[in-house]
Amino acid sequence: WSQQAYIKATNTEADDKFLYPSLSADGNILAVGAESEDSAATGVGGNQGDNGAANAGAVYIYSRSGSTWSHQAYVKASNTGGGNQFGGSLAISGDGLTLVVGARYEDGSSTGVGGDQTNSGANASGAVYVFNRSGTTWSQQNYVKASNTQNSDFFGATVATSADDNTLVVSAPNESSSATGVGGNQANNDDAASGAVYLY
Image (cartoon, rainbow, N blue to C red; front, side):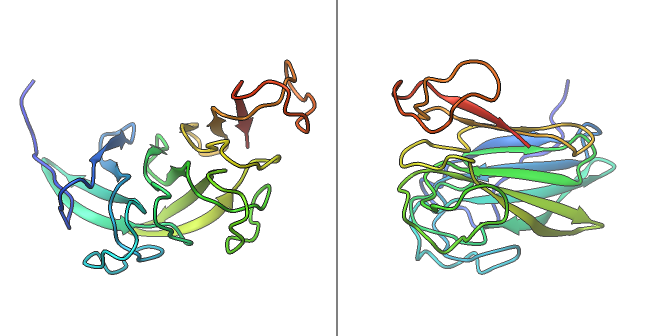
C-alpha cells in the first residue's frame, strides 16, 4: 500500500469535523461529510465562506482521474439549519451516481418522501437527502423523512444504499415503538429509544 492523496475540505475551518468518508465501488468518487461545518448555503455549489449556520454540516465530493484527485462538488441540504449536522452519516452508491446524506438533528415534521421542508415542528426528528450525479453535476433528488416522524428519533443517524441505487436503508436509533418484526404498529411509543430501520 502507498498513499495516493491527502485531502482536505475546500473551506477548512476549526471544528468542522471533516471525517465521514464513503467511496464508490470503482474508487473514483469520494464523498466526505463534515457534520459541524457552518455555512448557511443551500443546495449544491453554494457560498462556502459563509458561517451563518453553526454545525449545519456539509458534504464534499471528489473525483479521481488516474491517480489525480480533484474537488467535484460542495453539497448542502436544501433546508440548511444550524445544528442539523448534515453529513454526519452518508453513503455513496457503488456506481458513484447516488449520494445519500443523513442529518439526524433536522427538525422537519413532515413524513415520507418529498414532504414540506419548511415546517420545523419536530425537534431532532432527522432527515435524509438523496442526490444524483449526471456527468460531473450533482443535484438533489429527494428529501426523505420517517413514516412516523417524531421528536428526537434521530432518523438518518446511519444510512446505506444498494449498489444499483434502488434501495435505501435509514436508521432511527431513538424511535420508540414497541412493535416487533416487519410492518408493525408505528404509532405507539411504549419502548423508548428501542430504535427502528426504514427501507425505501
